[in-house]
Amino acid sequence: MRRLRDIFNLIKLPLQVAVVTAVVMQAITFGLIANENNDIEKTETTRSVVFLQHLLTHLQLVTLQGSAGTNAIALKVESNSGKFSGPEDQSFADGIMRTMPDWHNVSISPSDCIRLVSPIEGNRSALGYCLYSSANEWKDISLIVKANRVRILGPYVLAQGGVGYIMHRPIYLENGKYWGLVSAVILKDQFIAPL
Image (tube, rainbow, N blue to C red; front, side):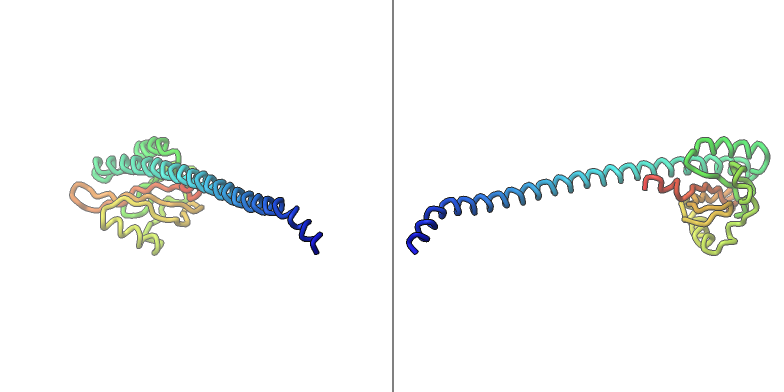
């Protein structure tokens, strides 16, 4: 028994050092892992912030394009007392579309039925479509018409095919009479492109 006690006394100090070393190493490891996790969280937070800033910038740019384009057409309709259907008006709408590269098309809807669309190619099937023919869509549109507000609505299944969001701008003539809408369509994938 004494021999066992002597052996134990011999290994007692190295064993204590080994246990303390193991505990310290474990603490250092947990500290490093916690620090690394903190660094990962900071990196992920930074990436998320950058992504959200990119998304916000994209949405602001797209909205600005649509707003400027629909506003230009609305002003032309208003200044022409509601006349907007001739070949020169098609050329004007085509020119406006060139300033809206993210948007799929723009349409002019006197009395809420599409009479002019640009570009005409790929969107011809939208001509003659009356916005009130879709109860869900018209419910949303009628609210913005009453409030005389520009809004992006959707997503909707589009008359010309596909799914998209639509910016509607009500047009009221100088006499205060509601004329119709100018609308710009952006395909869903283009609208949420950064996602």
